[in-house]
Length: 105
Image 1 (tube, rainbow, N blue to C red):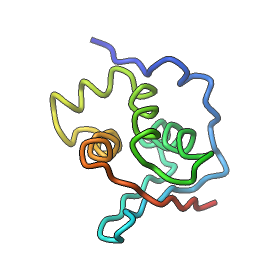
Image 2 (image 1 turned 60 degrees about the vertical axis):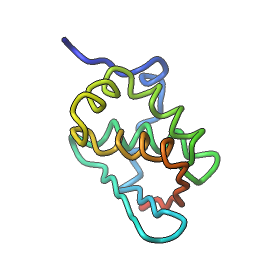
Image 3 (image 1 turned 180 degrees about the horizontal axis):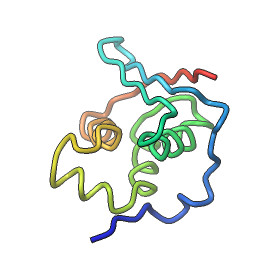
Image 4 (image 1 turned 135 degrees about the vertical axis):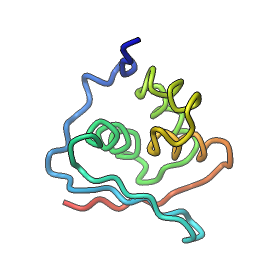
């Protein structure tokens, strides 16, 4: 089955001026980084879009991100860690995490 992104994905900005996004958990113990490279550009596009207004990744932003990832969420749930950026969102919701965002241009 071909996987598709969720409704609204195609209207998201490309963020060509962003080199990477770094997520640092509030307690500083964990860091997650997404570079603007082939194979990661859709994740960067989604995660930048859902965190643009708030500057953080928390439950509400993670829920929005999962909607945009569409069919890929079920793929991650069936094969954990196949999509680490979706896993970030699922873990954020499950453990009520909050991540500070820094954008590298």
